[in-house]
Image (cartoon, rainbow, N blue to C red; front, side, top):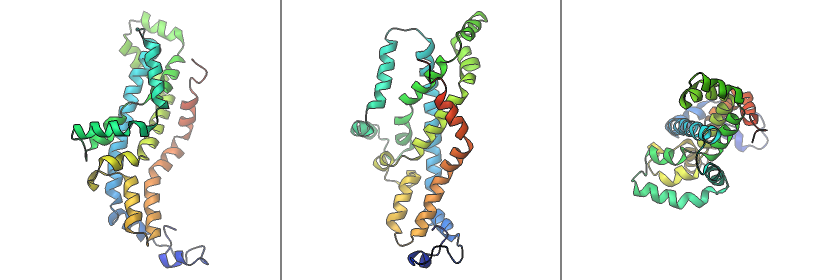
Length: 242
């Protein structure tokens, strides 16, 4: 449909286009401002992925290896956040964003998502799968917690970290409702909102809408094809560990 002339698209008797036209992609990229929306989505998504991976690594290491009072309770609290619907936190988060005067900024799109309970759980399970002999050997070699984390734990948990990064990217890339709430400036809006605006402003050119959809879906498709094996390995790593 994206490369089919609009006249043939409206003709129900035509299945395959008589000729292909890629002008819809350039129209969606330029007139539909999909290029700018795509750039914003990359900025927001990459920042969220980096933030979630870093915070998940640190928190997961603490829950897996450190001993401190209330550890079980705090881990239960982290897991409890996974059972809270996003809609429940919308009003409170939006009020916080307004008080901080972060509306129409990338901070509003990024900061609320820098921590993720699922990431903490996934990496904790991966860290618990590290043999105790390695921890003992590292302690005998004089490794500090930071040294053990960076030189042993993180390298061994790379499949889980890769899976978390990919899953985080997918979730952040597909956000629609929150960016719609905290942004009014098109220069800060993301690709999912751009698709909606493309539909609203150009309903007649449905092939252009399909071209915009392909542009928005292409990064996700590439990631899933390239990193499918890492995703499966990461999600199953440490699955039998408690």
